[in-house]
Image (tube, rainbow, N blue to C red):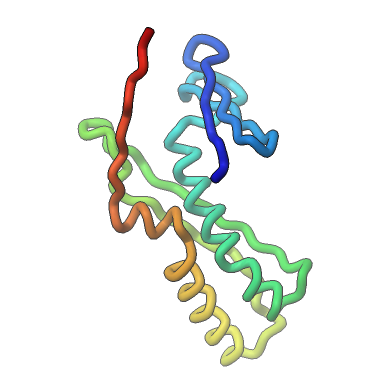
Length: 135
């Protein structure tokens, strides 16, 4: 299992780490050069959709295919939730005939629905537990 942790690095600034040596800068919206937690949530959804479709798209379009997944969703600040997250996958299928493009889109949607753990978790809801250990 991957070890993950977040450390405070300054006022309204944190750095998230994993045990593979990666890190991400996290902070509030008024701090330059960081992602907010909500932005990371949305990027995680889009990244998961991309990774879920990478193999079937590369198989049909070639290893160097281009895709951009735009993601958005406004926060409901009264309830502090993101009630809706929208993704738009921009993909050039002009090299395929219309029927092949249609079939590929079905494969892409099925792949996301079946293996995108982040999206599936958000749709299903999840339990989050916080254990505070203070000395």
